[in-house]
Length: 149
Image (cartoon, rainbow, N blue to C red):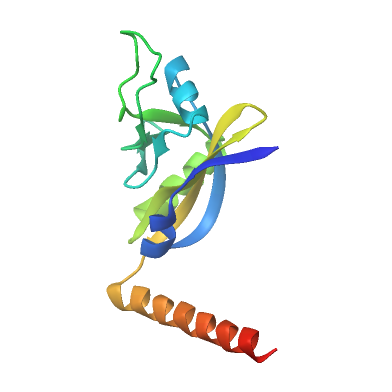
């Protein structure tokens, strides 16, 4: 059973999402409690590699309300759990021009926090405008068809 906690809608607006991967997260006790409460934000976060290990940076997990002085740092780097082959594949793709890895959503699966990350290529401003025009056109067509029947 999969319960989506947070989604990064800005990622699909700013990037072409090509491949998606599921990654586990290494968390502290107060972090998982905050995630279960829905106090997580993926807006400006991204994935980087240090010593052949993947880390999520700039992901904001709010401090746990009932935590004590050992509460977690809200924007610390958190290690992602991926297979070695996946890490190598992602590292090779990131070295190519224009690719980055962005988180698309965080969810709970059987009580464990998981993150969906995507290999992404940046969109230009005119690409964003074209996508918006297409969405508006589809919305207008659906509206006309709905009123017609």
